[in-house]
Image (cartoon, rainbow, N blue to C red; front, side):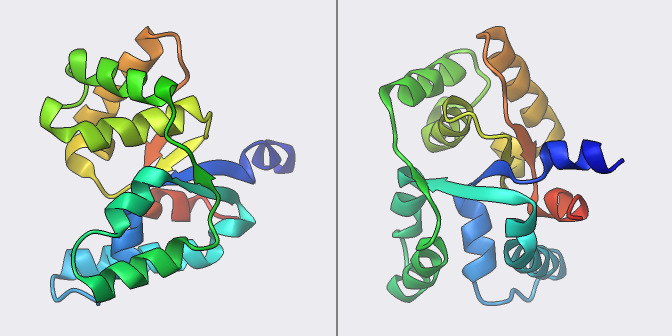
Length: 167
């Protein structure tokens, strides 16, 4: 019903770096990747009707890496988005997620993305990172670990899943 829809409309969504990368990269020749790029671009164009987007200092740091021309495209996409600061609370949570094996220790930045979204109280984390964030097993592990610490986990979703929910 309409009232139920209003509950989630304009929910806060943390946009992880893989989403920025998919949206700003040249269209891939790989059909699956190209499809995800198109979905991501459409979702980013329409997302403001349903979501309040944000990124973090970590997203900006990751977006600056690599080819300078590609980095400029990624950073341009981030320009208008509110930025969440990296806090000691988020760093502590990231370390706890690694210590609990919810995130592999070599993926500290992935742990920090989920920790930033959690400590900032966002509703959704948008990502294409299936290995460590949005794959079924990873999602389950993360949500359980966060809840075990007495915190509310954001819903981990791909832009495709979030696009399907647009009004």
